[in-house]
Amino acid sequence: MGRVYLVPVASPLLGLELIYEVLSRYVGSRLPVDEVVNVVAGESAGEVPVTVEDLAVVAPITGGTEGLILRVAERAGYTLIVPHMEMNSLPASLEAYSLLRLTRKRATLIVEWPPSQRVSKFINSWRAVSRVSSYVIGVIGDPSPWLVYSAGEEVERALKGLMPNLKIARISLSDLAESFSEVRGDEVKELAGAVSAKALNVRVSHSEVEKSLKVYVALKKLITKHRLNALTIRCFDLIKNVGTTPCLALSLLNSEGLVAGCEGDLSTLITMAILKELSGKPVFMGNISWVENSEILMSHCTIALKMVEKYELDTHFETRVGVGVSGHILQKPTATIAKLDPLTRTLRIAKGQVISGTPSSPRHCRTQLKIRVPGKLAPRILEKPTGNHHALVLGDLETELHYTAEILGVTVESPA
Image 1 (cartoon, helix red, strand yellow):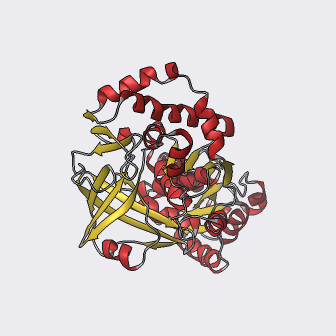
Image 2 (cartoon, one colour; image 1 turned 135 degrees about the vertical axis):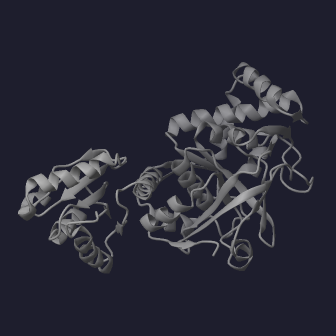
Image 3 (cartoon, one colour; image 1 turned 180 degrees about the vertical axis):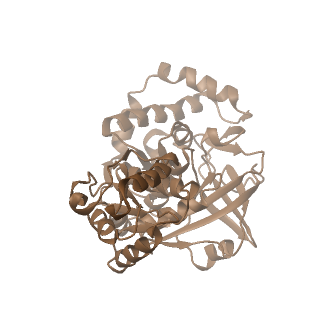
């Protein structure tokens, strides 16, 4: 992953004492940067240790620094310009930023003095994109055949266009089955007891819980072998190979911080990864099971146990085999729904509230969350769909996701 540099640029005309007095105010803001470089003036722009992997947070200390800003931007992978209120800092920023935009350089201008939450959130968003861009993603089996929009070579090409360093490791279901066959019963016995003991209800046999946890251990071994940061799996066909589902395994992996998705849906998996890197929290991947007025019902047979207050262990909904997770979110927290669509280069964002977090229907997947969102997002899901699956994280990430879209160069679709 790249580094974040605070790069002060200045004209020496105003004197070093005044320049360093302003610089001390930038440094005193405690921005989450990795390094503060020496003040850049004149030809020293060529000595800045910024590379195409890095974010340059440019602090125009004085006016007359337009050329310096441009030279730093030529070296950086992304440039964030953060002016202050005096000494013609903003005029220089506007002039330089105008040319950067015209020439489609990757740059953003944030006017916030002293630099605080907005700048910090932008840096957090850039770091999240940088980390996800270097992910190694395990695709276990081919995508499920019903993902006619959300998977396939065109989706992979489009994602690579947004994140060229993304790596995909293809792993066969037979490799997983072989790893599964090598897991001993004593490797899962204690965990099966602990997971079952904490469940509100267990509607499957203990042997089924142990079998599903063998998938978890088998996946952990493949994660280590292939050095994966995330994975997605052709869930339904796994039943034919090993006689159980990966729902509980994916729940545990997401709780541990490894992004794990279903059915080979890469677009939603990348969305999950972005939300996880932004928040440090596990993310829920769900079907859009119903939309009415401003309410969206999302459901799936897995959710990270760390996201819920209580849970039940039941069968997988469609197949009635394996172990599905029926999660219960008892509070009514703020939540953010998102979906990155690489084909249309759009990032859908909506902040809403979970108004029901307990399962109410036996005819939907086991975990069922009803979210109320403002504006027109709910009907827009029907009018302009971007596939079925969406991602949800607890908390408000609306600002960070807007910055994420800007960094990726995609269009934001928000509720307004």
